[in-house]
Image 1 (cartoon, rainbow, N blue to C red):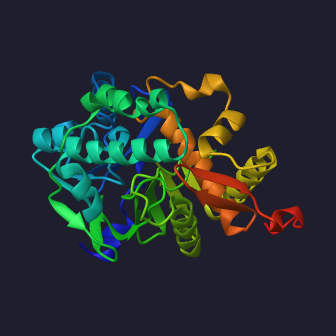
Image 2 (image 1 turned 120 degrees about the vertical axis):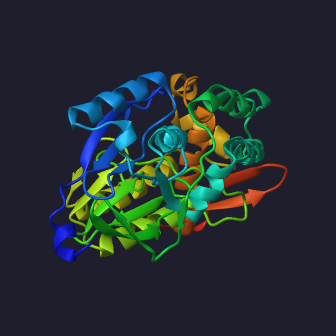
Amino acid sequence: MSSRARSSSPDAVRLRLPVPFPIGHVNAYVLPGEPFTLVDPGPRWDTTRAHLEAALRALGRRVEDVELVLLTHHHDDHAGLAAEVRERAGCEVAAHARTADALRDHRRTRAAEDRIAASLLRCHGAPAGIVATVAEATQRALRYATSVVVDRPLEDGDRLTAGGREHAVQLVPGHSCTDTLYVDDRQAAIAGDLLFATGLPVLLAHDGPRARAPLARHRDALRRAQALHLSVAYVGHGDVVHGPDLRIRHALRAQDERARDVFAAIPGGSHTAWELVRRVWPARRLSGAEHPISWPFVVLCDMLACLERLREQRLVVADVEDVVRFRRSRQARHQTSGW
C-alpha cells in the first residue's frame, strides 16, 4: 500500500461499549482502512456484544467484516471478545508478544496474577478476609474473557499496517505488564490504558516482587510518549485526548500530588501499606464487589505507587520484617519540598 493511500485513510472511530464492571465504559476503535481493523473489542458479555454489533451496523459493517483485531493489552475489559471476533470473522489477531503470552491460557494467567496479588496483600499487612477477595473477584470475572490465539505477535520497533496506516509498536508497561502503544504516520496513537482523558490509570503490580516497580515504568512510558509529540491519543476509557502532551504533564504532576497527599497522612511510627490504605481510602470504597480485579488489591497498588514515589524522594523508608512497614525518613523531617 502506498504512502498516499495510507495518508488518506479515515481517522479512528470510537465505539463506546458498556462493561459488566463499575468502571463506566471501555473504548473500542474501528480503523476503517485496509485491513479493516477493530481495536480492543471489549469484554465477553452479552450487552457488550450487542452494543458492538449495533455500533458496527451504524457504520455499515458487521463483526464478520473485521480483517484484523488489534489489542492494546491483555485485560478482560479490552480483550475478552477477541477470540469470538477472530472466530466469527476468520481474521487475525495482532498484539505485542507479551500480550500473546498472557492470552494464550487466560485462566493460567489469571491464576498466576492472583498468586502475586494475594502475596502482596499478605506481605503488606492485609487480613485474611481481604486476601480472599483476590480469588473471589477472579471467580466472578472469568466468564468475561477467554484464551486468545494471537496470530501476529509483535515486538518493540515492529511496524504493523492496520486500518490503512502503518503503526510503530512500542511496549509501555505500567498499568499492566503488556500495555502497548501503536503510533501511525501522523503521530496519532492507539494508547489503551497508558493515559486517560481524566484521572489516572491504576498501576497493577502483577509482575511479582522482583519486577521493576510499576510507577517507575509508567512514568518512563509517559515520558517516551511525550517525546513523540503525539497529535492524538485514542485511549481505552473516556474521551479521545487531542494534543496529549499537556495531559501527560498533568498526569505526571497528579502522581506527585497523590504521593504528597499520602505523605501527609502518614503518622509517626511505622505502618503497613494496608494500614495506610485504611487511613486514606474511605471504608465504603474498599468493597467494589463487581470489579474484575480485587478492589482491595487495586487500592493497595495505588498506595504502593505513592509509597514508591516517596521512597524515590527519600521521604519514606521501608523496613522488611514479617510484613513490610513504611515510616517517614529522617531526611523528611528537614525537607519541605523536592518534588
